[in-house]
Length: 293
Image 1 (cartoon, rainbow, N blue to C red):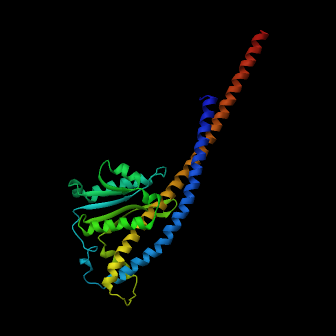
Image 2 (image 1 turned 120 degrees about the vertical axis):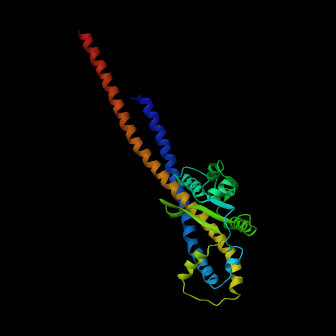
Image 3 (image 1 turned 180 degrees about the vertical axis):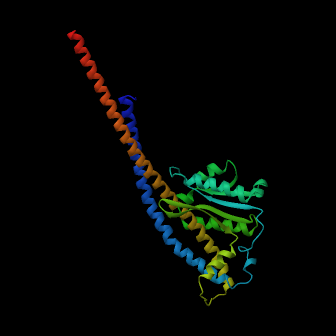
């Protein structure tokens, strides 16, 4: 059995950990509230933009010849992997890195063998893990710390230029989509080229026709970059909200575990203290008996 001093030291250590995890839980809850409000507010705007895109593009016969709609054989692949800059958020980062490895090995073994897969990591943790095995051509940490539209929009323009200039034949995003504070769902979305199937699915739900000024083609050229920028911004907001939800959940569980451990340690301390008192009494009684003899 551990000594009373050892148990007291462990109790002090666990109490300190409990205070830290409790504080981190409160901080994450406050950040989550802001991030959750941002993503919930952006989703209707993003969905409406996609509906407008669907309606406009449905009647344009040659949209597949437009640069951002043009399908090519996926010889050169770029994956955008979104993680966090910090840990202590459960399996949030490890699940993304594992899913990225699985996805590459199952879907792009030939491109991987030919070194035709590049990664751009948004978030420090993903870069640290994935650069050991894959070619990471860029990483961004500020998008996570300060999720602002204009820097992300500039990055989206860079991705569009990559595709138009044929630097890459397909660009995909891997990230955690925010469902609720306790649930995050890994999503893999094709960013470029724009898939006509998704456009047609949205169009089937509309059933509305509009009169456009200027022409549909001109509007499409204006809308597509804006929609792609908004889509990328939304995925990063989703990931940030998911990160704070995962960290809040992890810190809540850690705090609960600390409380449970403290309960066990205090019980062990009381048992050890009781045993020490009993030993002292036995020694006193034995000494008294020896003096009588």
